[in-house]
Image 1 (cartoon, rainbow over the protein chains, first blue to last red):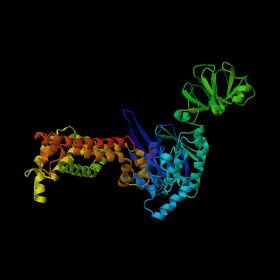
Image 2: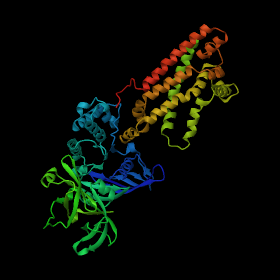
Image 3: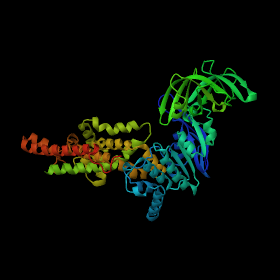
Image 4: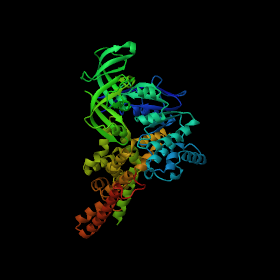
Length: 364
Length: 222
């Protein structure tokens, strides 16, 4: 278990400064650190690894105190045994794959070192590349070598900063499987940074969501990312519709409240009850994939929000069509090309949008 | 040709000494976050702007029998430092210092910081990181530093004249020799020596530029 409670002020150029102020617990297995860029993810990882010294706080891996500002403890990075795979991987360009992997094993006798390097190269399926330099190796394999180089040192914590960026989903899954297999016997805490929603869904056992240097929520992915409470996080988590709204009235008995989107009186919807009073401004987040489109006014639905509008544009992206619908405010809905064909949707056509109350999330 | 041999010997010694003492200085200048760093940077760059005679003059005063260095040298070795080959080396080291240190700083600073971070999290201290990562990746800079300080020493005149004088076989280098020949109106002699120096200097500079343009490198570029 890795426990950290740290504060670190970063003065960037100009007057603006950024403060990381977090308390996190990373238990064995994969924990996702999620947030938009600039949220402080890399700063947090640098502090944990000992590359950056926090202004104050405490970091401990199990019973080992790595940093404690009150006690004046600051274990330097080389002595922390915290492995860190950087976004750029940072493989040594002048060393072969094998030499890169052996880099952290200098205290071992030659024979044993060779054995361990061989084992991990095989575990990550890159043993054929042992004599190649990083410049001669393809993307996915470089990522495997970077992982192998970090894990061969038997670290007590593993930090991964978007290590699989740029790989296709299949390759990503294969590498994650190899990594999980390696960790099955060891059970070390792995903190995995990403701003990709897909990776969260694929790997996440637990998620810590960071925004503007603060932990805004943590828990299982479903809870954290399906009900984001911060605007930036909502954007990062893939909520295409972020609309400002005015609260009209609260209906505590039903657990809902009515809000008006934008300025148009026609566009009123029902959303889950939140901490708000009538007349206050709120932000409503809705996923484009959670919106239904109908060419006639639908009846007999449990969904409480049916809004009429007009299609502004249809744009095909791969197997998905992005529909923009003007209802006084513009909604983005994702539909299939088949639906476009069957419903004969074209720009300018009047449609009805259907939104479930619980697909509408309030964010700060 | 005695003068040419002497110049080569001087230039090689100076280049060797400068690599050894230039590396820690360059390392410190590249990675220290001390706020007063600019003072040392200015000091290192000083020989670039000072007339060689100024440097040579102070070096001569310091090395003279009443100067601090001269006194120390006499106490240690029983003879003075001015007008000797050792004195010449010392003055040339000072004079060529920026030519060794600047390329080293530039190449150390050019190493991706994340590689240094990677080395640290893999358990390497700063000394090991220097030997295994910074130095191998700075090889073109090291070659440049060695070659430039060699070439610069080969061509120096003012400092040598001030500190070394003109003693055949001891301190008369090629550049002094050329001056000598011209003074005695021996233009053929002067031309031969000058041509040798010209060719060597051109060859050396071509080598440096080839290394820095990566016409050849010891490892494939990423």
